[in-house]
Image (cartoon, rainbow, N blue to C red; front, side, top):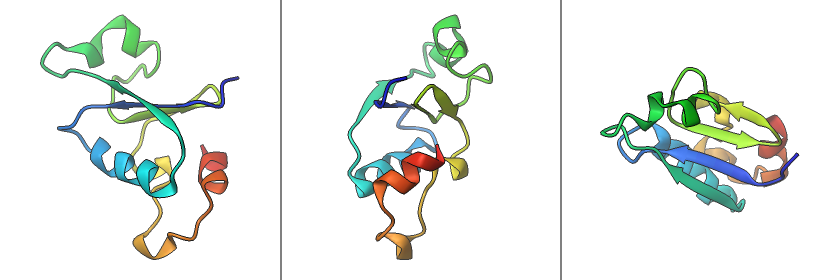
Length: 90
């Protein structure tokens, strides 16, 4: 399984919170932009990643996390959380 974190994102989604979290913990990740205008979130390529077609989606170690809250967003007071601990929760 890949250790790479892949973040499927659209700037006009709740993905902004997940993007912020990834930046805060400093983990390397790759962004895959998904266009709502082109309906990419409902096309077969993305549905293979997330059958519900929801954004944001994070894929890590073969597991897709689709809920913003489940993506491990730490509370602002929890900046001391280690990146490994957050990614382990994925």
